[in-house]
Image (cartoon, one colour):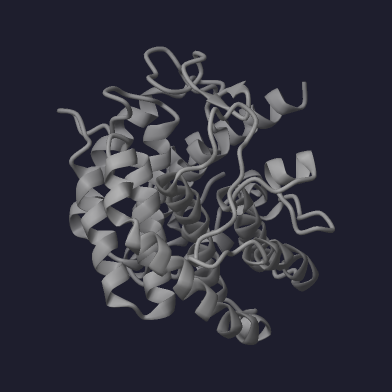
Length: 330
């Protein structure tokens, strides 16, 4: 039985994300965070690990979730292994503060400056996230010196995306989820680096994301609704809101979540009918059609269920992640 009451109403506003993740109330939900892959010997994750070569910084962001999972589990050895992905990513930092980006399978041209900015903030949003989870964990002393040494490199990377701020809006301002992802990069790195300008940029990007909703409060993607990307907006926005609190976001998430719940079937499958971006062959990633990201949908439900004391939404999280595992095992 899911025990959402593990978080009292009084503690919800002050509990750290580390504690929230430690209190996930079922093995399936806990393992969604802690039972992750690790980088290879080169520090590569995701497509880099699969292909044995470097493409761009954003593809390394999974290593930051691997680090979060290890920290939440209290597994020092796995956390050290996961940190290697960070060292590898910053080994690819270039003179302008951004990261080396090369043409990926399916690309028709070399990466442009706005694309380099985008992949940098995709990485930085999870890096800042991981470092904040570490900060509130018992492993903070273990990583303190490494984080201190990393901060100058982070400043250079954040200066790079700050210089490209206008291009972020021009390139991805039509997609709510990417505005939240960019806001998360500026905001969480701004907290780590104690940089108020970065936090200001985060709040401006949140305002853009909030403008990308339909009449019922669903976050829109390419002019319509998408059961995967609405969940991404919810997930990224909720994580950011744990650190840069905004009461207006709470109300917005309630409305967007009302629709998201309707997209889950009794067996945990996520409905794709009517989606604008995923599940129907609309877009490609690395030469393959984009599908629903079950893990991010489940995480969006889990964060909402834990912070809002909503047992039904937590049960949806468990159904979705269980369904995704059954699909993966076939």
